[in-house]
Amino acid sequence: MPELVFFCGTMDCGKSTLALQIEHNRSARGLQGMIFTRNDRAGEGKLSSRLGLVTDAEEVGDGQDLYAYLVDHLSRGGRADYVIADEAQFLAPQQIDQLARAVDDLGIDVYAFGITTDFRTKLFPGSQRLVELADRVEVLQVEALCWCGARATHNARTVGGEMVVEGAQVVVGDVNGSADEVGYEVLCRRHHRRRMTAATARAATLSPDVLPVSSD
Ligand SMILES: [Zn+2]
Image (cartoon, rainbow, N blue to C red; front, side, top):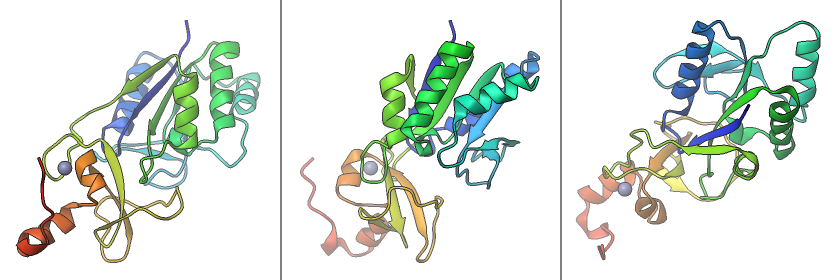
């Protein structure tokens, strides 16, 4: 039975690396996939991982009908033995419905990869729809660690190293954002709640009087 599978987790949990691995394994068996992405850090029409691997992909546009796109591709003699949708948190809920329809009506496996929650700990709309519709949800916990060494479960947005909790849901930035740039950092829930990033923790160590009182 074809499946809609949602591989999810924090930033840095290895989603795109796994997406590239799935792509590699299937193309090595002679299968040909359709790869969708949106706002990848490597630029338009790319699926990249932090390990430096990259492959070409179809950049999904606003309001694009992914089911219609697949039907059109197949009707022109193209192949799509499976679908990979990376950065699926940036897809609209309707586009997730279209991917589910591709599984049911076209019999294609769809592997979606995405960040579950945004920097305010709220579900991205695309991720919410995937949780609602997926046949299977796989939570990835691949060595994403908070600066304290605990398992990182939350995404923080930073500006100049300071955690911020206001702003638009989607602002493209990168880890190690410096100066006044928007950056992202994964934290454990405790340090997300306390808004303690690696940079503010370092600053607190240098001036012990501002160290927050710990009750645990
Ligand atoms: Zn922590």
